[in-house]
Image (cartoon, rainbow, N blue to C red; front, top):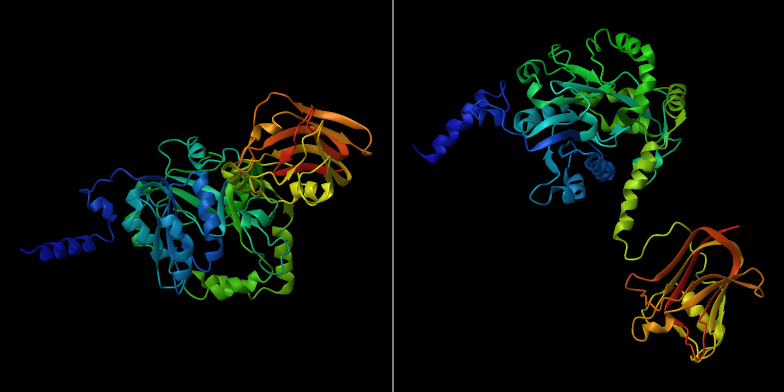
Length: 480
């Protein structure tokens, strides 16, 4: 018996059990193997290339371990190119597929259930315009710890976000720009499902079941809870009336706002009513054509509802996440605007073949060279000063030392301020004899949160035969 014949027999055996069990369970003698992932997302993406990286990064930092991404574009090349960084390494964050039948979302989900559901303990089917929002934990693993161990399904309700009155989609991230939403959580849900509990056979025989929203119609005996950790049964029975009654009772549709929900960015501009219809030609997406058929009055009313409340939670959450980029900065971050670059400056003397004003101006050029761009003659109490041309509250002064030789010339100095260029106040004195750097990422930084009021700032070196030499000076503050 040849290897090819054995492989064919195994393949035929697997196909015979296609309706009955995931392939990973078949390969493990009918037992569920230990999963590689705790929490995974399954997503169908069509025309979502420009938003996919933000969506993936957001859910990865939220605690999602893996994403099974099904590209439903006619040509998968653009989306594939965008997600290449997520496919690299021994443990890639994304498993990527192209599914060429437009709108057959059910078959994409079943492909995941058959081929990959054994790899993860929990999964959720989520679209690219939907963001899992966990308000009080900011962590999916922490949030899930509050539920009973024998639970099968968690219901997350939709919260619709509006177009923020954009006529056309702006460039940039979704979370940074869309801050308006409806005033309360709605009745439609997405579900987090324990994969071992998924009724595989029942779903194969009922492909019309909306398994991304509920499993009640497939197996009503599953243990299901809302994000409020309340048991829920018959939520979708007599929908939406029963669901509305449940949500309004005890103000659940308000309470969920402070716990968790699915932030659904349905419309990203006023032209999206037509764009959604063009994207959604056939299959399960065909119902999206109704958006284009809406009257101007209906569109305006939908816009008023979904833009009613201002909500900065996701915007600020995403902004904080992106701020971690400063952790990789060669120079330390600052909280205040730079106010010194290009402003007129002067110094007590110069050893360069130019005026003292021109020499002093080199230090606020905005260019680092790691050398002394300006240097005074050896003298008593040499100084460099800048006219900020207006009164500011000064919060930070940075001095970038030369890195070629004689770094110790700037070991001690005084920072002074003035409002009239006549009366000077000493604001800070360095006298520890310690050298500091500059372009290497270690300039001398004087920081004061309270700040002081000034128009002129002076750097002075007390003592005889001192030489003031620096690469660059930066001053940060706020206009008074």
